[in-house]
Length: 168
Image (cartoon, rainbow, N blue to C red):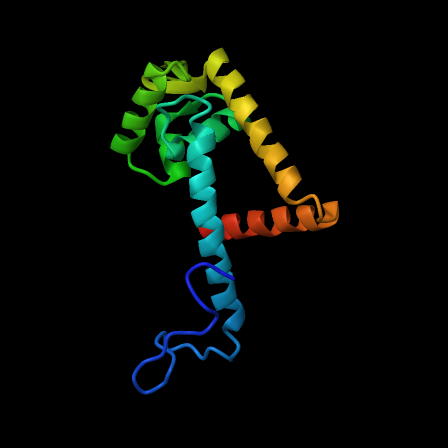
C-alpha cells in the first residue's frame, strides 16, 4: 500500500475530484507519479539524514548535495554551489562555515578573482564522503537486487531527465 492514500482520490461534496483533475482520465499517470515521488522523497530524506551523519555527526542532511557536487567537480565558488543547490548566499555561507568547522571542506582564494573563494573537500572530507557514498551504493545494490541492470540504468536515465527538466 502506498503512503498517504488508499488509491482513491479526494472528492468534493458534489462527488467531483477535489483537484479538478479527472481521476480516471488522461492525467492518472501524473497522479501516480506524484504519489510515488512523494513516498520516494519521504524515504530518501529519512535515509539521507542517518547516512550523512556518518560523514560527520553534526552534518545536516541538506549538505550532502554540496559534498556530491564538490566531489564530482572539484573546487567551486560558493555562488556556484548556491545556484546549483537552489539556496541563497546567506544559507550557503552558513552551511559552508559549518562544514569548514567540521573539517570537511576548506576555502582558498580564487586565483581568477581575489575577492572570491573556492571551496573544496579536505582529504578527511573526501575520505568520509566516499565511505558514505559507497555505503549508499551498496544499499541500492541490495534493494534493487531483483532488478535487471538495464532496468536500473533506465531508472537512472529517467531520473536524470526529470532532474534536468526541473533545473530549467
